[in-house]
Amino acid sequence: MKKKRVIVGMSGGVDSSVAAYLLKQQGHEVIGLFMKNWEDDDTEAYCSSRQDFLDAASVADVIDVPLEVVNFSKEYKDRVFGHFLAEYQAGRTPNPDVLCNAEIKFKAFLDHANKLGADYIATGHYALTRKVDGHYQLLKGEDGNKDQSYFLYRLKQKQLASTLFPVGHLYKREVREIARAQRLPNFSKKDSTGICFIGERPFRDFLNRYLPHEPGEIQTPSGKVVGRHLGLMYYTIGQRQGLGIGGTRQGSGAPWFVAGKKMAENILIVVQGHDHHDLLRPQLTAVDLTWVSGKRPHCNWVYAAKIRYRQSDAPCAIARFHDASCEVNFAQPQWAVAPGQSVVIYESNVCLGGGVITA
Image (cartoon, rainbow, N blue to C red):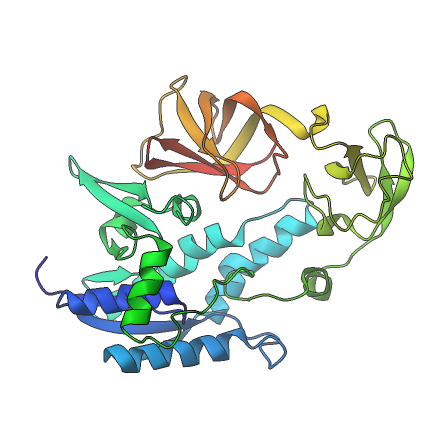
């Protein structure tokens, strides 16, 4: 590739730092861009963005690239956080990273980079792209334990054509080795596991600041009351921890798991045992479908799917399409299918796209 102007989203983490370093080594004109997308309670107690900026600035100084700061807080609140709250209030479990990528990292960021005259943008995602017959494919990252294509399934052809994933062919250990060898100050920084752009904080306390909560009964499928919940928004399908029900005091003594919600009655449904039949689903329905190629996959072909990040590929087939949804059938029942999460469809290592689980 000839020398290009590449705007790299530098988050302060080791992955995006090494991405910027590799592009600089390849001879490109590299400009770092630090995105500040959250301003509420961004204080010393959580202080994610300030430390992240300092880390990004330190790396930019070491590898000798300019670093620009841009504030997308309004876009984040309007396009991502509002949807995030609405989904929780409706009893679903959204994945903010998916929407964050589609609306901020590969839309607001890409638009801003274009104004700066960028030929490409780049991020530290563990994913790859490939051009086949004039169309771009989104591929899994080489490191199966870090592959992030699940979070990128909403990307379109124009976005993929403008994006580079410099660490997608590397394993995480290799990325850290490069960072250590180049004396990047964040070579040992732990990976972020908090809410996209918001960071790690007590989740229930955080939600409670924005949404009203209404305690109610915890019941078995038969209607037996076994406890009280703090508010349906705090629980997700398959959850075991934090239910406040002693496994040895009720029923068989096996641990309890969240199996469903009755929103109208404000009731949380729980069952005992990891393999309870109410936690297993042979099929699901997905809406808000997005296909990377712009064309939907074939019905009744054998594909693979993930219903959560880090899940092993599950053989499946798309049974049928409706106007704005599709039905996915699995070869083996899937555990804890959670409405609001994404189902992402693969053909071998190619991410085809997916949708949001509704039922």
